[in-house]
Length: 74
Length: 216
Image (cartoon, rainbow over all chains, first blue to last red; front, side):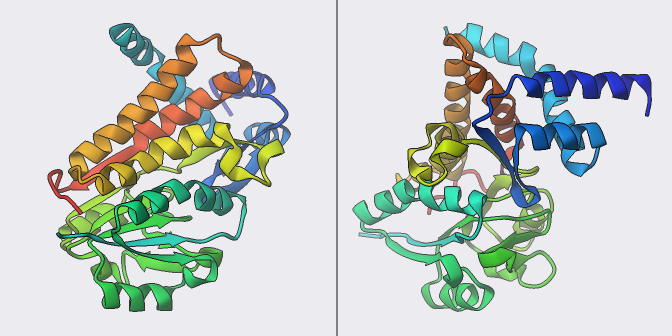
């Protein structure tokens, strides 16, 4: 695993830590996951973990467009 | 007066399908109000044999799938395949399809369009939603999950309101955007912030393939 990948996992884990305990996530046929499960998967970098990292990266890349969309609609 | 014939599949065997089941009720209620001819295959009825027989019998103009899926398959009760890209894709021919399931718009959707499906709406990646575990026994009251499932189901609601497939897709995209905007501009709680990335994910991976001007 490269340093960039390790840093990315740390970033995603930190962001997941802020998720409230009462929430769970349904990822289709992969199943449903609470915060601590998600963190385990991300640290293991298995298929669920990789999906969560992909979602996070997608989100970060989208922020500029989303902010623009909000400004356009205020 | 013409009334469309609608087929809805709703398995109900795990947390995810229980939520889809609960949140499909407003769509079904609207179809009943409009006196559309609606057939619902729920729980164990959502199996291949019932599905195949029902399609043949009622010839639905619109099929609304709720359940699990992958790139080539949509499933029913206990994840039994209902439609598979390699075995019975012809069952979708001449119909409008909305698949609230994971990934099926990646391969099954495009292949079905090539084989005569009018319009295929669905998701090219996993449909992910957040829910409140304290509301698990009453999923219909879970507004966290509702943010995702209402935006998605707007597609079916707009189709029942006699809008075109393109407009139904646009309405659903607008519903996702409206929710995202309200989360961004409110005094965001951590709960709402946790939801945002998944709402954006679902919105970006929802697609409308084929004829954009079709109506059910």
